[in-house]
Image (cartoon, rainbow, N blue to C red; front, side):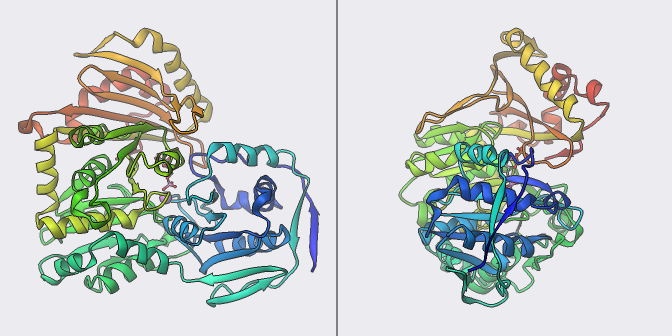
Length: 544
Ligand code: VG1
Ligand code: CO
C-alpha cells in the first residue's frame, strides 16, 4: 500500500460555524486546505479505525474532486468502510438516515446548503456523529484546535473510485460501497407516512402540486418519491436535475429566492400545493394556492396535526424550536400538554433532546423542520407531512392555517437580513446592544414594556453544556419579541439577522399584511440598534 505522509502548515480559519466549515470554493482549493481539515477530523476521532463512514454531497462544484480526496485520506487513516452516494450525491437528511440505519460511526457531508455554487460560489464540509446528527460543539472545537497545529496529512496513492458505478470497490484495505442514496431514505418515508392515502389524493385529479428542487440535491429524491411512488403528475418536480452551479441560482427556499415557484403559486390557475427545498435538501418552503406558510407556523401546525400521521399517531413527547423561531410552537405545545424547548440556532442543539426522547418535532424559522426520525432537518419529510395532513383533512392549506390561527392566535413573524456588512461594524452593533441590556429591561418602547432583555444563553438539559452569546433578545409583556444575531454560515462579510414577532389573539386582525402588523416593532428594532444609521442601509437585503 502506498500511503503518503504529506507535510503541511495550518490555516488559521478552519473553525466550523452554525453548520460546518463553509468557504468560497477557491478558498477550499488552496493547497492542502481541504486535506488539513479532513486530517484534523480523522485525528480528532481516532476511534474511527475499522469503522464505517457515510460520505456524499449536494452535487455542487468541487464535490467529485473532494470526495476522491476524502476517500483516499479515509483509506490512509484506517477507516474500514465508506458508503458513498452514487455520483457522490447525498442529501443531508439522507446521510443522517443512512448513518442511523447502517449504524455507521459517522458521516461527512459536502455542502454549503443554500449558498450559491460554481467555481466562484461556496463549498462546505460537515461532520455528523453516530446518532446521525451534526457533531456537537465539543467535537467541532476539537477539530478546530487540531487544525491550528497540523503538520502532516495521510493519503493513499490510488486510482479514483468510479462513482458513476454502483458496487463494491477497495481502496488499500478499505471497502468503498457506491450505494443508491435514495433507497433507505424513501423506505423511511414510507414507514412514517400513509403513502396510499397521499396517492389517493393525487388520484382525485383535482389536487396538483409543484416541488421546486432548484437544481439542487432533492430533484432525484422528489421524482422518486412524489412522482414514482406516490403517482403525482410527471411534471410535478421543477428544476429536478442537480447541477454543479445549481443553474446559477440561489437554492434557498423562500419567497425571494424561489421566485419562479412563488409566481406559479400566485397565478390564477395555481395548483393546490407548492413546496421547495434547498441545496442540500434539509430546508422546506410550504405554499398553498396564493398562500405562504411561515416556517414557524408550519412547525406548530404539523404538531397540531401529528395525530393524523401514522409515524406520530402515538403522540409527541415534546417540541423544540430554536430561540428566534416564533412562539407559535409554544402555544400548541401548551394546548397539547407537552413541553416546548428553546435552543440556540443550529440543528446540532436538537440532537440531545431527540436522543433522550424529550422532543419529537423540531423546527427553525429558517425553513427547517424535522423530527426524531433522523437527526437533521428534513425538507422532503416536511412536504410529505403536509401532503399526509392534506390527504386526511381534504382542506386547502390556507383554511388549515386560518383554523389554526383561530384556535391558537396568530404569531406575526418576519426575519430581516442585512447581508454583506463589514464584520467589525456588525460586531460593534451587537456589542453595543449587549451594553444597553441592563437599561432596557423595564423600559417602555412604543406602547410596549420590555420584560426581558438578555443575550441568550443555553444550558443543555441532557449534558448540561452551556452555550453563551446566542442572540440579543428583547421580550415584551404582550409576547412580542425582537432578536438580533449575526449569521454563522456566511462566507463573505457579516450578516445581521433581526427577528420580529408579535402575537395577535383576535381573529378579526389575522388578515393584516405581516410587515404592516410588525411595522411598529420594526421601527423600535431600528431605533434600539440604530441599524440604518450605522449601516447606511435604508432597508434589509432579504425579508423572509
Ligand atoms: C442559518 C439559519 C439556521 C440554520 C443554519 C444551517 O444559520 O439561520 O437556522 O440552522 O443556517 O442551515 P445562520 O447562523 O446563518 O443564521 V443550512 O440549510 O444552511 O445547513
Ligand atoms: Co441546508
